[in-house]
Length: 168
Image (cartoon, rainbow, N blue to C red; front, side, top):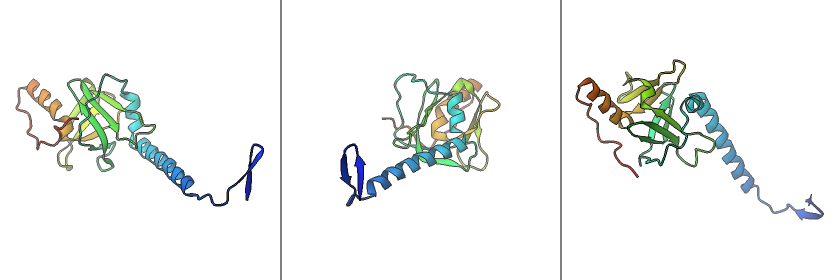
């Protein structure tokens, strides 16, 4: 079997389909991930709270499991996160982050931060936008903000189990 490439005839006999199957599988994985993220509301969250490169990022070493929209539909151990005094930065771990924007949620935009009933130590945060998407986060991500909000109310901060203090 021959295929014409310019003026030369090139034999395709003996060319294995494995490179094409691998490339096709990678493209399919990216497309499926984008569809799942879109369905969860990641794109709406990223449009509302875009990360516009607010300086260097100190990502935590441990990946987080978060849910967007519904607490039972989560991204398990594939979300990078960084929290500081100003806000929360979320991103998908490489190589799954192809075509996926990062998110930066300022703490000043968080109107609701409370324990989600029935989901253990999971916190639900919602922004000030009524059409926003709720995000469900483990306590390690929000413990700093919980301490700030508790001190503003004059309360003692909730204790944590120490999961999440490691930084790169």
